[in-house]
Length: 251
Ligand code: FBP
Image 1 (cartoon, rainbow, N blue to C red):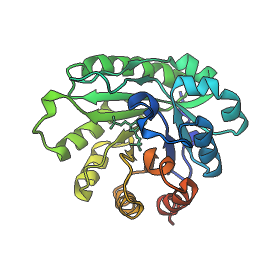
Image 2: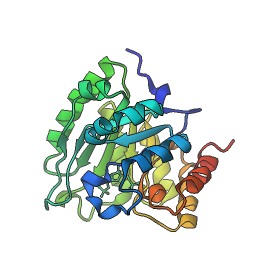
Image 3: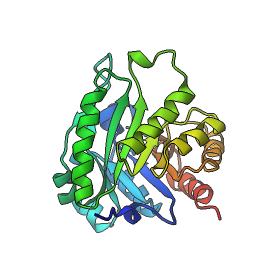
């Protein structure tokens, strides 16, 4: 089965707008504007994002708008709150079938490697990956080292391990967090082989610092970003979008 990756790529690069923080962190990340999913949908449309990432609830409630604006929808299939302490586990909340019904062109799933529950997430991912690939849908794996067992371990090694796991489990794209070291990220990208690598935005930074980091990231073979807070918490999200696109699609 051919995987329709082209639907979420533009000239082999990507810029995805992530908006699943309402579940992961609660509305503490939001203000009066960006608490409204329509605000995000408009940024995705006007900024011509190569994909917007929602959980099932937003995809259902704002379905008409997402469809009408023809925004490539990446549906996040698992999630968790930040209320439970200890090793994290993120379980499936939506099926591949439902994602397709909602018009998703790709699905996403988070795996916390190092957590004592990683086997449960790896197992769920396997099923999702198989079902999505049967329908030609690409699968994006958020792979984050977390939990007690990773304490004291090298961030560089964990980043490369996360990347390699993405390749081994059949992710088409992996989303990882950058440790801030160019050489380490290059090795992580190499470790991912034919699996493509995108970087998460993280908490809101000064624009200058963030753009500098993105410039660095794009030198390593990464294909782009899946960013949330650094865009929709910005004063002018479309202005920073423009700058990000200039860096990502620079000739
Ligand atoms: P940001 O660019 O806002 O960091 O979004 C990326 C992301 O992976 C989201 O998809 C997710 O909600 C969030 O980060 C998870 O953050 P964390 O688990 O680090 O608190």
